[in-house]
Image (cartoon, rainbow, N blue to C red; front, side, top):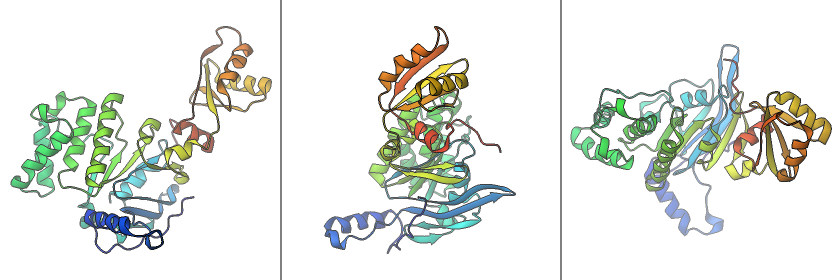
Length: 346
């Protein structure tokens, strides 16, 4: 499942080659259509820390203009993969290609084509949004003449223009996240790496952040790789690789992954979820398990099961009972037997 074919070599690196390749493909017949070249591909990544295996034989790729996600709980290996991709750590094994050409993520030429937003905030909160972007432009080596219009464009794109000259300490978590993304766009990267962008951001602000990211992918053919443990955030990705304990356990589009679960998911909460799960299994003959503090049952017709479960327990024993279509969190639970909020030992 985690094997990725070796990408073909592109005739010229960068965004221009991807657009040119798309134009060639548009005019070619089915028999002449070559295999598309990924913008960025990782094959067979492995990383250990002492006796602990953080990643083993992990492969994935992202196409030009695509949003790709690495989904898993804390300890799954997402942040390690992010650090390898951003050149912060060397891989023990595996290879990388950028537009079909082998690269070393520690090389400055590779890093120059990345925009990296880390999980932890990195703004100077005493500076304004505009000043933070100006500082970022200077670190990227942009001249003031080049930086000024790009800063204005980035502020507008992230809908920050009206508050560009306010100190960032006055901003919400979502606004600060948008400033960080605006800053890494100044040098026009080909690949944007986002490590847990939803951490500490309220749902409405997160939606706005993702709306801006999607518009960037369409307008610039920029590729995005995001690590996340949030199912709702993973739904914004076009393709996903699910990691568990450092290994790939599933890959595909969100709808393909959800299709692994036929029917509905019924969640039953109460003071003793283990006892609730045992009762459902013993009395109804349905496999139930406890995930994230609730008893979970997968069934073809959830609405018909709800009254049968209610009848099993005296009044007041159940705190809540709900049925819904499967989510990516349910897919992860089915594959691994645990929830996305579970944490591995460090």
